[in-house]
Image (cartoon, rainbow, N blue to C red; front, side, top):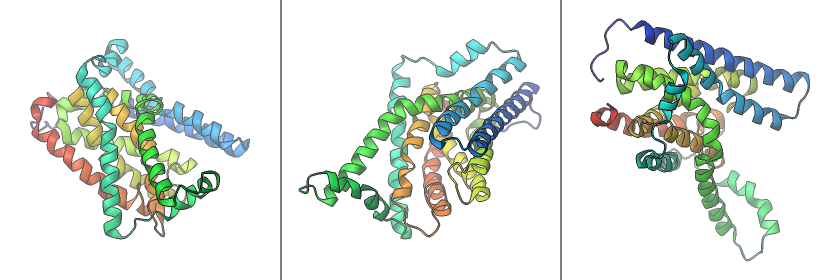
Amino acid sequence: MFRQASITMPKSIIWGLFSYALSTYLLAFTVDILAFYFIVAYKATLTPIILIWGFVRMYTPTFATIIALKILGKNITLEVRAYFGKIRDHVTLKWYLLSPLITLLSLSIYILISISFGFFSLTTLIDQIKYLQNILPQEISQTTLLILVICSTIISSYFVGLTLNAVYALGEEIGWRGFLVNLLLNKFGFLRTCAIIGLLWGFWHGTAILFLGHNYQIHRIEGIFLFTIIAVLFTFPHVYVRVVSRSILPAASLHGSINALWGFTILVTQTFNNEIIDGLGFLGIVTWLITASIFMYYGKRQKTLLQ
């Protein structure tokens, strides 16, 4: 699996990759345009639209997988079921529970990097919790309250990542870490498979960023490229936990935990230009480069796990 790929690719890989990419991009684009239309034309309430949009969009890779499998003449039910692996297996459960801790590790790295660059600040977070001080007993100090908020955020994000967010993320993981990993890994090996999936996954968010300001309200054009870099780096731990567990479920819990916790980086970063610098900007890229490097190392080193 790790030998050099030949120049020619089997037609099944070409057709599978093309049909999946085209389908998921077109479906996502359609969902984004519809959301944009309802928000602008009808001045629809933003929160319900975003919730519906988010769920539907995150399942467009699943529909694209079905289309691609149909084109390849595969048994859709058997193929998709195989992505889940042995659900009751202890290895799957272990990685499902451990994978969100990768996000916590990355958050710790992020804070250390933010401190070293002089960008770390609790000012925004303190401003956010001031209202709590007005309704809680005065005996609770600001420091105690701050610690409680941080701990509760981390703990709740872990469980949200395992539950609700994992259900949302599963729609993407069926495509990105299910179909594409099975399609590409044996041909391209770990590193190149992650690079291909990461690039496709990153640019797939492009229309959401451009039309809806997803993650980047101000710097939308720059955001497309910043998020693509981040997505490539995200992909290494996602693919690793998917392969070692032989299931997409740990990738879903990791994905869900990132969606639950990574927004916390905004609250601990004080910069002149948050979108370019914070958790989905420069600091986030440096952080996830370190995290991704760990999984690059183990992904190449522990070959027996990736057979």
